[in-house]
Image 1 (spheres, rainbow over the protein chains, first blue to last red):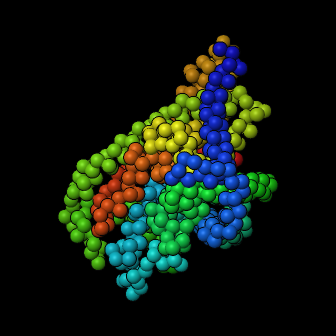
Image 2 (image 1 turned 180 degrees about the vertical axis):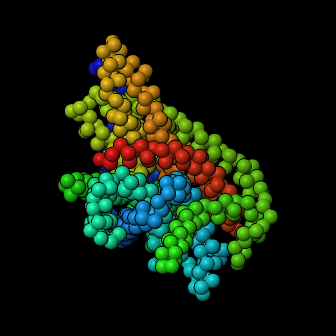
Length: 290
Length: 271
């Protein structure tokens, strides 16, 4: 078999299938967004930009946009802050490899859990009447707190679960990255009587700038897949306090009368916003890392 | 003395962190073995008479059993096809594609940026029109987007780590590119590739949104588990906990492997 034939045979099926599925779903979304198709009836007409114009007057859509933006901001910063703090703490206080490995194993467990399972575990913990967290709070005289039913707390309560899963996971990655760093600059700083936090703030963390940016990007992409967690924990409620764009699109497209075209218009906008945002962040991140 | 206090404090803090990481899961496992009256107590019970009723309930429930079966079929088929198509493609991208390889890799990676809703909504109509809505085949097909792209994404670095010399020596001996791939690169990269497949497996096993939208009777385990709360008036927490344990077990089996994958990825140098 010649080299060229091998290249074609190995690449074309995989990339061809991926490209077909991607094109079908994007073209399908654009096509349906320009129609007035619903799941109830098979008939539909061309309505042009009608769905997009209606979105611009939809308060619930803008609410979902805002919730999504808050969700991204809270989960990405929360995850990175937790990961940096804990990685530095473990790097400084746990010196035995065995203990480091044990802690790493423990910290890897939450991220492996299916989102549905994590959602149930925390719904159980958050429960006002029988949850362990409210029991602990009641010991110090607080509560019961309605973590998931209070509109001002619900989004943060769900975000904590996300940070629990990803912050601990990123802690392990950062810890492993810190172990690969050269020791010399750190030793030199120690000789200069630098404080521990100074060493990390001015030496180790700047050396890890590139990986930190990559991790932030990975988390930002991952946070877009928040549907599973929010759907099981609150279903978007109370009211629309935790309704992100993907939840609203799902409710519109499937639950409430199956307004496929309207939901398609929404997912097209979501696709454009994320593509533009990530391209900008990607390029800025590359420039900044260099 | 001050040092003693500070080490004790850090140890306590680290212990607390491990409790935060594992406690919620262990609490759920405990709950899975409790009768409902041991769960709905004002003071959480650590000591109780364990029961297997919850597991018996979920394993006897035909919906949950079907969900488990569908999950196994859909996940193994999509990971298998993803591996068969993705691994050779990754090898070619790592070895034979210098100029346009990066563009193809970026395209593959950009699929991960796509919001799942943007896939689910058009596919539900297309599937209804084609008559493959609510079929396992339809689910496997959309999961291929995830499995093929993830396998390629993780397998390209695995093949890049295979020493050039070995492949070149094999080519000098007259091995064709397919033979070099099959007899040399594949066995050498196998440990990392296995980790990549496990990671892919966990991603698809955990998926909810696509299964929820594209299937009804033939849904997977996460969908079935997510719908348990709506069985009857009283929330069956024991049963929910048992279903959660069932859902959690397969990914956790592979935790050691993932740790290994993480180590090699970090060691090979962050880009």
